[in-house]
Amino acid sequence: MSSTTGEHAPHTAFETLDAAAYTFTRRAWVDAPPARVYELVADVSAISRWSPNATRADYDHGAGPRPGAWFSGLNRKEGREWTTRSQVVRAEPEIAFGFVVGGVEEGIVEWDWTLRPLGRGTIVRQSWRLLRLDPVLGTTHADLDALRAYMADSVETTLASLAQWIAEDHEPSTVVPGTHL
Image (cartoon, rainbow, N blue to C red; front, side):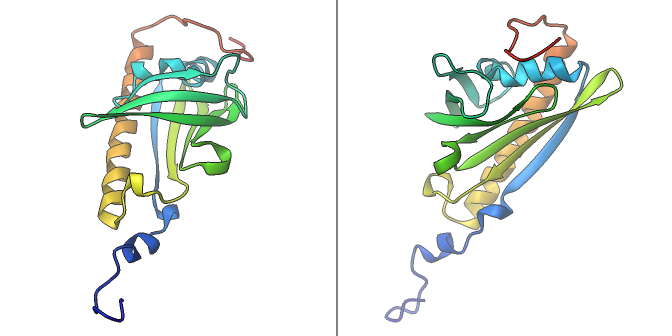
């Protein structure tokens, strides 16, 4: 509280937020083996096929799905458009792929895909975790709750679209280095 007004300072609410509280995981079964699913999710240029928000992504020249690699992504939400820079933090063919928006040093959000075989297909688990607070994402509990809910809905759409795309029997367009089919 401000000693002169008796009201909360505008930045107090933001300072009391805990980034660790903003995380979620969603799962879906897809009709493809883990190697095929890894090939699709590690090819960041394919994300626009499934994501309602990510409209384009490309690895930096000469980079690919390996820890330390960087890529840029174009995103849209509610009439706004922005570009992000992300760094791969996990690239294990048939097991997992993850990246941090903003990079390891300055990261703001971590995305992680993990794959587990089940029957003839794969359980795909996609996780989102806020790493640090940033006013661009919101400054109140309500802002961050709404962001988490929006992103969870986006992930559910992404996973459903990925499963449908695979079910329609699309052939691989590229082979990700290090992936063995």
